[in-house]
Image (cartoon, rainbow, N blue to C red; front, side):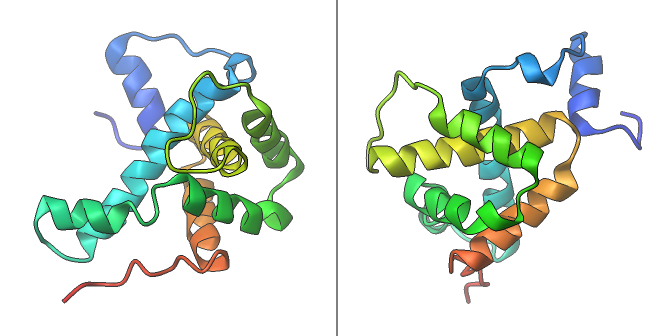
Length: 151
């Protein structure tokens, strides 16, 4: 793959997809993408903190990849979101989902969906640096910055 081209663009090129207007994506499609991107960031951070059994990696990651943690992050980030980001977050939060939260309140599930929609939007608009900034700030502001190295 060529360097200097974003991952979403490389994927579009590799699979012959055409670029579409991101504003036409449903908020739940954005959340679907954002869920995967957020999960990849957290898994990467967990793995970088120590090579251990996959089961232990998973148990560490789920502290951060759940509706409660994501809802806390979303609430903590509200004051630093741009107007555009806040609008995308609200679209995701207010989207009518046909799935129910398994281990979370409806309110937390909706806030988490809003955060995931925002992450998906930023990913698809090639703003990975902003995603990393928001995830890092969100973890810190919500008191979830325990991605420390395990001995």
